[in-house]
Image (cartoon, rainbow, N blue to C red; front, side, top):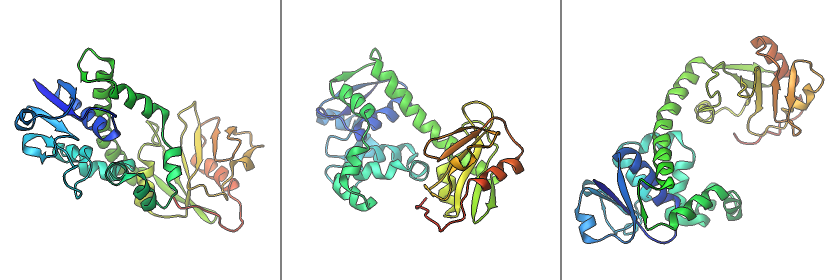
Length: 284
């Protein structure tokens, strides 16, 4: 029987996600939130994360606090499990999570070129609630609802890595990049989770002239036309009188058609939503 030992007190994304992916890979393990003992550190059946002042993967000890050159414990665990490189390329949040944990919000904000208050304003009450519930526990066993949630979250993260990788390769092969007026548009007919890995595909393209994606809608039949990079020369409110369009967001950044129009027809709609003025595009 495996054990996982994580630090007591306030829980953070680092130790929480470390426990999640370990639960998903170990099968079953009891989780203890306390200081690690010498016996814990010496026992290879006990995974010690974010506590213990030791990074010894062979003995399954994954702390980073004793060495400022190490990334967060979650990254150390992901390296050990063989998922780190994929996570670095597939999850945009992944490298910044480690920076937040190791260097703090002020250095992270400086690296991202934003004010620290933006990071705090973007924090989620869902994160706060779940971490608070984990913080309240000293032992987490299979009888706890949070145990199943954490195990499923870890499984989802690992499965999502391969799904995103496969989708990115599929987008490279199947998506079309079409010139529309002075810009370019991505059009994809993949209807299963159509926007999966679209962010990674945009990074791969590295072309600021790509200002719109056209994909099957996930809410009813038809296409979804989405503005990318907040380029204000794309405004779907210009399509307000078009009988093929069933929905336009009040801020003009997304539109949906009634049906899956022929691609030439939906590209005509895309052209009608692009103004001819001076560029005001933001970075993608």
